[in-house]
Structure formats: C-alpha cells, structure tokens
Length: 79
Image 1 (spheres, rainbow, N blue to C red):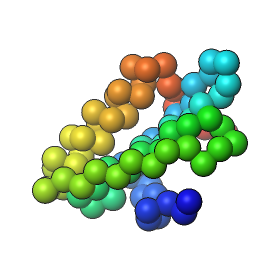
Image 2: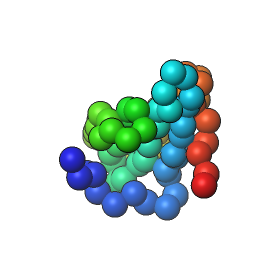
Image 3: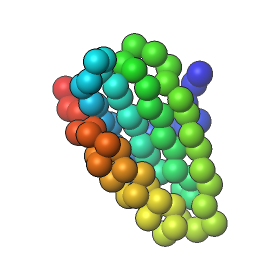
Image 4: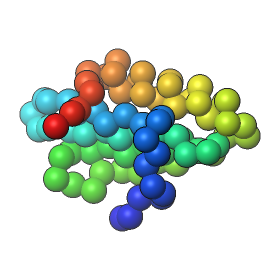
C-alpha cells in the first residue's frame, strides 16, 4: 500500500529491532496526524493513522508513539 503522504523531514523516525527477524517501525507527523507503520523487514507492515484536533496534540502524540517503539526495543536506523 502506498504511504498516506510524503514523510516530512522534521518529525519522523525510522527504527529497527532485531529479534528472530528484523523488524522496522516508521513514525511521522504530518499536520495534525500521526502516521506509523511497522512490521517485518521485507513486508508491507501495518499502517496506522490517527488525526488529532491540534498540531501541538499531534506533536505530543508523535513523541509518545516514537518513545513507545524505543521502549519496545527499537533503535534509530541509519544507513
């Protein structure tokens, strides 16, 4: 499935975790929405889009979502 929009350069995190398989997580904020995608590397993964009433509430939710993935063992991925 195509992404719900272009990933902005500011509020975005690309994360990876290694267990039995490599997993990925992408979290970004676009306007008042927080978009995340996670799954096993090489698959489409699962999209989740949540819209918030204001940009500040979306920023807060973005930070919480990224923190949740880090707590689950994901770390920043850079090539």
